[in-house]
Image (cartoon, rainbow, N blue to C red):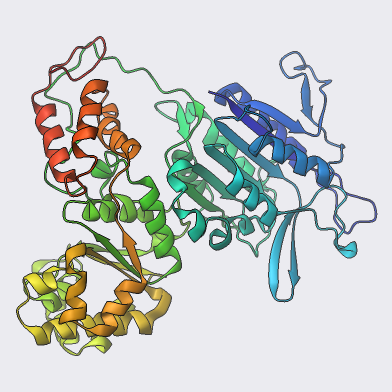
Length: 539
């Protein structure tokens, strides 16, 4: 696997520029370069590189120059070569690290961020390399795994998802794995640490990237963002993170599995039979094949306040919302603040949807007597209509509340009281419209029930659903392969390729057969025979 990295640290800026020279960036960039080379098997390009005259020159013949300028053209050409190289020499993994000045220009009410090269001079309108250009380069890049870490002021401008990863590219996300880390928000400054000679972000990166800090000596983009977030939780600047696609190995090695003492009894079944995958870690780690759809849902929730997930019965709607969307939001690794949102446990409307909603909004871990009192109050508020639900949601002291209603078709299947059903719809719609960004309502709905709202439901609610639909499409061959094989790999097993191919052929054109697939895999797992030399299911 080819792994390329471009590491840039700029200390020097033009004499006539208002930008002051820096001392940490070149030092930071060199430290990152050595760690990636030594522990990550990256082929590292330094910008600008000079001969190393220190005692370790045999091991590191080049280093990042402390007094070497970097022009805009040099930076642009190096980035183009990294992410969109000519010919077929395309790396599997491409990583870009930058430390230096960051600039922001406001023109006509529109703000734009820049990486300041050595000849940048804002007084003359020369701001450096545009982050808008970098976003476009990443969009066009054929590199499957893309990593960008920016330790500079206004770095958060890189994470302008509406422009860089918007609707036009949502469907392509399953083909890209991305890790973006910005030192601060788009309107903040980045600082050097007062306890080390590194930038605040870089100091946290260097520590988190050290594989010796981890039990399994493997650092991935997910463990990295978790560790950096924890390390900088009280810092003056707030780093931003975004991870898309599958996990990316960064440094260290994954220990080989010793199956000599393999025991059938102590192995967790990685499949869920006829049940859905839930949002807990023990389920989410076995949920595979829906990465692109999960990314799309996270983006919809991040930018909107209503999402209707539509699919055939058995298409996996509940699993992708629970083990995909909710789990990712709880991790806070695709949206940097979502781990601090309130996630209401998903509930089903049942026979009495207003009562079900009231029960969902009451803390489940209260003492029985306290819960009964809160539930009584919640039910009274719910009977008051939208104003009552608005009060209940506003009681959550968090930036956002995510409310998931699973199997929304039960409003028609089980609820026989049309007046109660209409009040339920009205309360939800009024609350969403009144609270704006505070509440995001997520529904899962069987495709064959969509017409019910037009026939006998609420026309305004039907319009809201149609305007915010996300359709759960059948899994592609590659996604089916991931759903079958990757859970087994999580417990150090493999399924024979012939069996995998046959399963894909059997289910590929049956969109509602995912529960049957999971049930079959569960049964096969229970009947498995294990060959410890190659760790495969045998039939």
